[in-house]
Length: 230
Image (cartoon, rainbow, N blue to C red; front, side):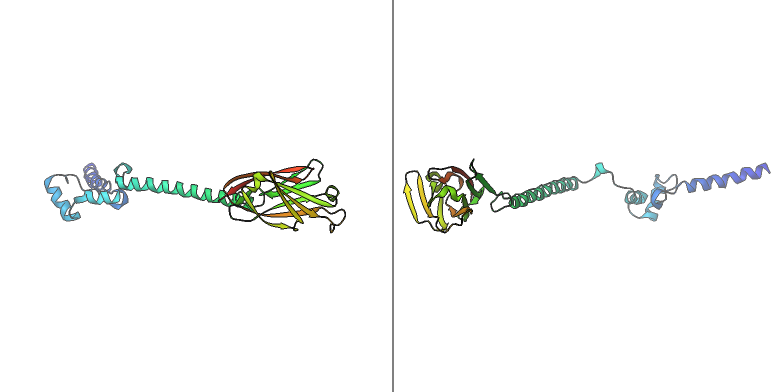
């Protein structure tokens, strides 16, 4: 009985060795002794050229340190391209937001209004205008300050950077002087208690900053400060 048990241990040991020869991913490790000359011939016949190691190399995951340098360079370039793309999208979003708010003219926040201390004169204009485009300057005047005729003065420093295209309503007279032009408007048709509104249609001639003054002759004046874009 003891001899029979000892005889049974031999095939069990052999079976255990065979089972231990199963590789991860289903590849079978070659039996012991395969690295000798006879074993290599058997492996070549079984696995083809490259022996069983070719099977192992196909089934094992690649080592990152063994990756081709060209592949790593392509990955770095792709990551840099993604970063540049994100920056580009951010810049585009900022440009759109700036345009909506009036950073390039005609935006929601693109107008400035200056009012005199007594509230009798208010001047509204765009903060940013474009060369060759038309922009408006609106002047509102309390009729009590105008009298029988309203005289508005526009300074030379501003007129040197722009052209006056239209004036609504039409002035009854325009008198140039060394420091600008004085426009005179009749007030006969103005309703009592209603502000007098004068609109100048302006076309910028240059790029840069246009500064000047507009106001009543003998009364308050408001500053004009505009950025002129191409």
